[in-house]
Image (cartoon, rainbow, N blue to C red; front, side, top):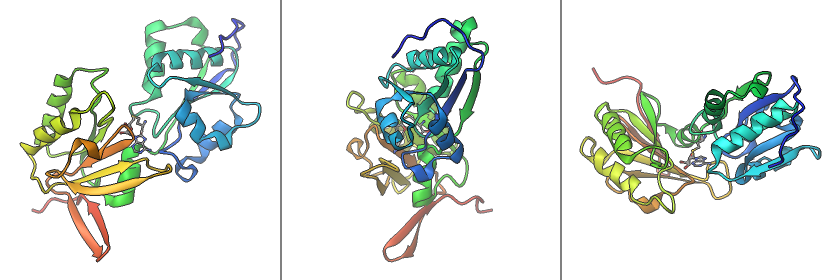
Length: 263
Ligand code: SAH
């Protein structure tokens, strides 16, 4: 990343944008305009590549590693502080396991006076769970929650306690970061916890590479779920006790969670 000069400029802007799961059709017009008019893009290479068709020839790319979120947030704020119009790019929604929280974390922790004049804007995007839900019907139609299975930033005991609480409360659960090359057992552990509270017939949706090349959406049951069904590009939706699979025709089924409980 380029080191910004120290000449501050109060016209600097930082838009923290969510590009949706991948395709342009699922990106808001607001985000498309911001990407087309920004002087600088900051983000993880994969996301910058996804939106490359929107980049003006003069827009500078600042690629960073996916794991150095706070550093990336700091760099984006520094660029805006010298008067640049910066788009900090997240996949899905920037407020869901993504860059918006990282920006406010460095803003609070470091409180650099050079950032005071930066105009910050958070621009929402379609999150992976919403895209997955839309493709199969309405599994998030009633109360639901999202849980990240990544225990890099928090201990597994905290995650396990949250899964159990969500299972007991009968929430539909969207699992983000279910499996990675280093984290191979968390999804099956989550399944084991859920199985204490939910039937093996509970519908599970596995949505991979949403809005991108190689998109797949599979419906299974909780009993059938195995770790190899998912990877870092998969979001997993586990139904509540009320979630149902409905057959529209012999080759078309939908998953939904009714809004009303039977009386
Ligand atoms: N801000 C993103 C989430 C980032 S956390 C959002 O709102 O969607 C990264 C996790 O999100 C991945 O491990 C995966 O679980 C999910 N995810 C992000 N993009 C996805 C996509 N295109 N298809 C399937 N899952 C995706």
